[in-house]
Image 1: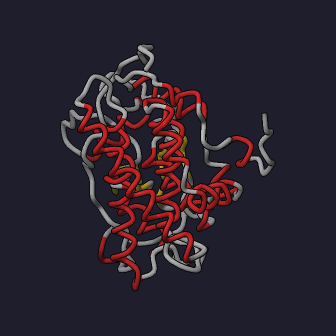
Image 2: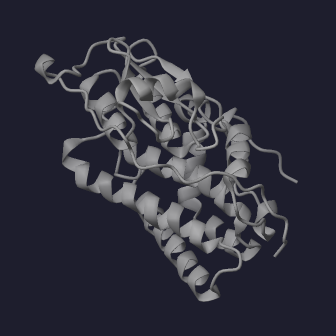
Length: 293
């Protein structure tokens, strides 16, 4: 393993501070009206990237405009200067980080929600009919299971597996957990075209974002053998490659931003796996076949 450090900087994503919901009933306060709401996103952030893809799949550019933020927050607490007025207008004497994602209400100038899963569901359900049914009611439990699998079995497990200087047995157990999660998804995609069967849903978005960050961020801290084992799920990576070629997915990728954000936040060390990229994301996002060495 190399001992090349990456630049450390701030903390992890804070817990959601606002949990308002968009509803259909005008009496709910936040009811579904075109051009009332605005998203504030930094697509280098996985939470924001999920929302950006859902927004694109639903074709909501005119219905709910997006304001893009820089990949690296410009405040020491991990917040964005541009979001500070919204936070301060929404919570008296707010002192936490002004973090993305944010769904704001242009009518009131206040924040509706900073909780990505709620935002994604509300966009899909309250502005229904503008794209695929991304959150089918009959598959809600399965969708939530895939969300947990991606958050715990891929993202969190990959972070633990790449920790330098930690306990070797714990890193090995984390790698086993990661490989188990990938194996479950591999099985799903050998028996169906999409993660939940025969149609694209939000579960595919969850998996795609998790695999983007597994390859562009977490891989850098894994050894070459671990990366080889991670790559050994052909149906899963083929599915991710196909999704990347779709404009709603690939056009939202900010590879430079992901790299800058990672290097600004990371406290880890590069390992041998840093040189073993699994997918050529830029090539697939552009719809071309990557060059072979």
